[in-house]
Amino acid sequence: ALPIVAVVGRPNVGKSTFVNRIAEADEAIVHEMRGVTRDRSYHKADWNGIEFKLIDTGGIEMGTEDQFQGSIRSQAFEATNEADVIVFIVDGKTGINADDEEVARILRKTSKPVLLAVNKLDTPNKLDELWEFYQLGLGDPFPISATHGHGTGDLLDEVVDHL
Ligand code: GDP
Ligand code: MG
Image 1 (cartoon, rainbow, N blue to C red):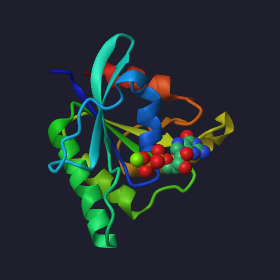
Image 2 (cartoon, rainbow, N blue to C red):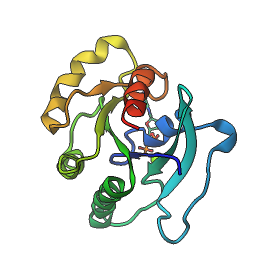
Image 3 (tube, rainbow, N blue to C red):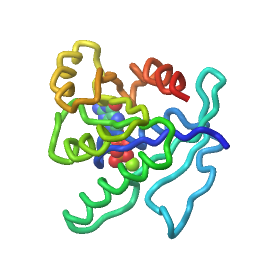
């Protein structure tokens, strides 16, 4: 079976944008486990010839604030169970919020590699925004722009290093 890379983070940070950039266009959805884990999609991807499955979490679930936060939490737990590497995406424009801290708390406890990606840093002079993310206690943050592609190559180099 292919190794699994799970992309987690609260809504709107750019998880799907990142996954869609990386996933093989002609083979976007490998399968959906409807009814079981309907809130995630699986995509085949490869980087430098290393193939893996990319999981995009948190697509469609909606509900009360509590259910919403519960779902972010359970996705983080599921990722620590099933993934070989976890990419935790946060929003470099809005900064850290309580949901990010909650996910970080869960991810700090896993022995799996966790890579912290700070998204929406669309221009190089935005790198000052990186400093606050050291607070999450997950090591060096990777600056990326999922829409422009800046930084995603460096992040993927690190991802496949851990596979
Ligand atoms: P998800 O809920 O985490 O899957 O987030 P989406 O991928 O759906 O993106 C949420 C919003 O953020 C969309 O409007 C995206 O176009 C926007 N977005 C995603 N990545 C970037 C980025 O790198 N830069 C900017 N400026 N916007 C982004
Ligand atoms: Mg999404």
